[in-house]
Length: 441
Image 1 (tube, helix red, strand yellow):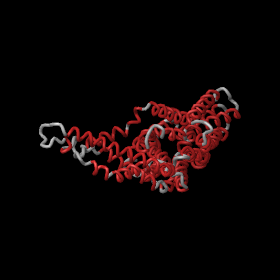
Image 2 (cartoon, helix red, strand yellow; image 1 turned 45 degrees about the horizontal axis):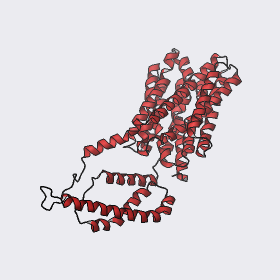
Image 3 (cartoon, helix red, strand yellow; image 1 turned 90 degrees about the horizontal axis):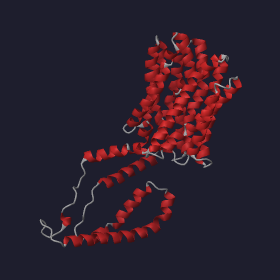
Image 4 (cartoon, one colour; image 1 turned 45 degrees about the vertical axis):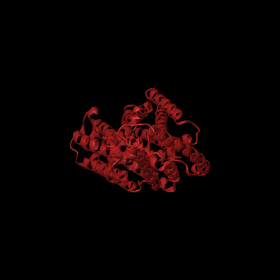
C-alpha cells in the first residue's frame, strides 16, 4: 500500500482515463460536427452525447457487481476495447440513430466499466488516497486538454466520419494501462484474513462438557495467537508490536477468569436435575447445530453487502456525484456552441474548453495535497468549491466579454477538479472495501 508500485498503478489508471474519456471531453466538437454533417435539429444532435452519459452511469453499477466475480483488470481491458471499437464503427454512420446506438449506448457501456479505476486506487492507497484519486482523474482532464483541438483538426481536415475512425485508433492505446491493474499482495492477505475471521464468526458456539476447565485453558495460547493474527491484519504493524506484550498479560488474566467463570456456571447448571439427561449435563448436547444453513449465510452476506444503503451520507455523496457529472457534461457540450452564438471565432470558442480543462487538471492534482495534509477538511473543501461553481455559472450569461468567459470557464474547471476526486475518497468513509465497487456503481 502507498508503494512505488502503487503509484505505477495510479499512473496506469491515469493513462486509461486520458484516452477512453476523449470523446466525452470532445462532446462540444461532436455536437457541432453532427449538426453540420447530418443536418438535424439541436435536440436530435444531443442524443448520442446524452445517451453516452446515461449508459455510463447504468453500466457503472453493473461493473461494480461484476467486479466481485471477475478481476478488475479484465473488465477495464474489455472496456477499453469496447470504447475503441464503438467509436471506430461510427465511420459507417448514416443517421443520427446509428450514432445513438454505437457512440451513445455501446461506447457509454465501455466507458462505464472504466469507473472501476477508482476501486483500484482505493485498493493500493491509504495515506495518499486523495492524491492518487486526483492523479487518476487527472487523465480525464489531460484528455480534455489534448483531444478537443485534435478532434477539431480531424473534423476540419477530413470530416466527421474519418474523425471517428482516427479517434477510435487513438483510444485503443488505453488498453496498455489495464495490464498494470493487479491487486497488491497485501490486499490479498487482508482479504484472506477477513474471510477466515468471518468464517470463525459464522460458526455457532459450542458448550464444553463440565469439568473441562484445564482443556479450555490449555488451548488458551493458540486462541490468543489466532486473535492476535486476525487483529494484526487490520492494524498498523508498529502499533501492534508496541502494545503486544502489555495486551498479552491483560488478555491472559481476563481470559482465564472468564473461562473459569463460564465453567463454574456450567457446573452449577449441570448439578440440577434436567429430564432426559442421565448425568444431568446440559453440555452433552450442543445448544445449536454444528453448522449454519448455507441459505442463511448467503442472505446475511447479501444484507451486509448493501448495508451502506441505510446511511444518509451515502445518498448525499450520490447526489453530489450526479451534480458534478451533470454540470460538467452540460458545460463541455454547449460551451463551444454558446461561444459561437456570442460572436466568438471558432478557435476562441474551443479555447474556452482548454481554459476549463487546464485549471481542472491543476485542481485535480492539487486538491489531494490540500485535504491529505489537513489544510482543510474534505467536507468543507467540497462545500466551498460547490459555492464557487454556482457563482461561475451565474456570471457566465452576464459577463459577455471573451476574457470574462475565459476566466469563468477556468473557475468552473477549478470547482470541478476540486470536487470530483474527493467523491471516491469520501465513499470510503461510508462503505467497506468489499462494498466499494457496488456502492460506487
